Image (tube, rainbow, N blue to C red; front, side):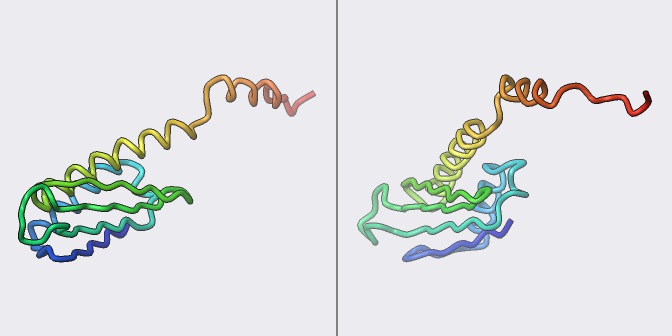
Length: 120
């Protein structure tokens, strides 16, 4: 999984880069093998005015689907943590929605039937 970080009007320090990488890896968990790329954009919306104005936008490709989340924070660390938490919630939702149910697995088993014995 490749994590690309882009910033506008925000300095990306080594500490911020490590924080974002750690949060994103934690958010995607075991599904990281199914992700090709994650793009994280951090920007300061209001410039030097201050306030809760750091925007974090995350785009991830999961099994042919594009997942997009964003959040605001008082600083880049908070915004990245908030967006990573949203990404984690969205991934759980998408994976659960597309996981085959137990009843559909029973149907497939009954249609296929039990294995036949090769010896007659």
